[in-house]
Image (cartoon, rainbow, N blue to C red; front, side):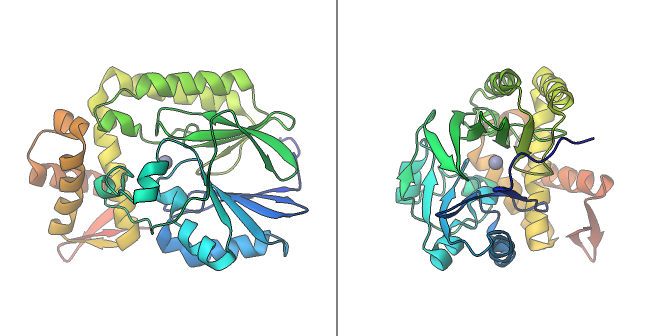
Length: 305
Ligand SMILES: [Zn+2]
């Protein structure tokens, strides 16, 4: 049985596949939202936040990292509410110049409307959210610029994509040819040392039985590390499935364009999966069909959910 939810000032909006969750933190001055989902879900994000903020003004967005499924609603929410956007360091120059290569949107064929960051917070800074103090903890692995938010008093960790109930996010640095597995292992060790009562993940429902999730994450990480090609193959399937959910239908040319963009931008992809982009995209598409994510219809791949 679950333990009681730690605070009525914390509201989790659990989303589907394209968008990250939103953590809404309410206090007397207004509301802060942690992460804003994917751009194509923007109208829904606005509506869900409106329903959860109890009439309080949305004053601030805090991003754990700037992947398109976590920051894709920033521009819309800022335009609508005039709220400030706080981001962790690491990519603030790329945001200021809106460098889509450095911000990963080009390599992943994902969309993220340009936004302006108002404040860069630092690792180990204390953020006041929902009447509590939260520490921004560096969480390398999935994205070396990512942070988690830790509320020691409540024992609550907003883990972003470092730990989900059954897994964790793709280790993007490895795709870029940079070490990421060891950093992810260290992040899992950090989470274990915090001994959280609750984890609010970037995707999926909050959970309070953290040890089995950590054990599963560690064993999966070891399995990927043992044969890194497994990770690269999984990562490209994730990217294709994500794009398919966004656009719903992809021709062979569309599929090749997505795989080509990752292949061109990610040395880890070239190293593990070879240079035959056409064969690679055909094989990935077949794997998506076999796993039930997609089906062929009139010569195009369509999302099956
Ligand atoms: Zn992410």
